Image (tube, rainbow, N blue to C red; front, side, top):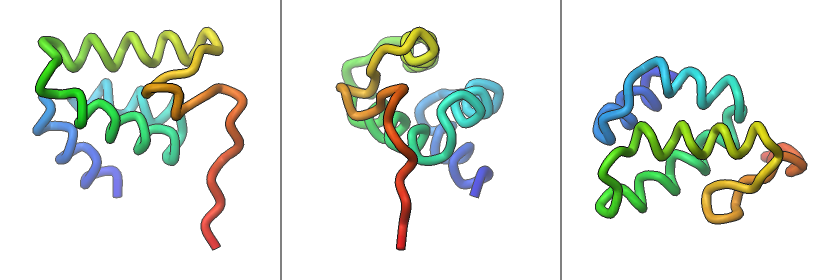
Amino acid sequence: MINAIIDFCSFMALERDIVIRTLSVLGWEKAIVTLDYLAEKLPSLNRPHGYLLSMIERYEKGQAIAGGQVTADQRPLIFA
């Protein structure tokens, strides 16, 4: 699964290191929501890498990211 995410992110000019950091900080569910949000905003972004780093930094400070879809206090999604 990680290779699929890395491949997807390469289309947004995101390098492997930033993808791994995103996954390690946010976890799988939150990372996927965040990367999907980034993909939607891609046409309006000059530096997707910098935008993603900024989101990660805000998340680490306890702020909501991805248009409010991802918060530090959010419980993990459970799929039945």
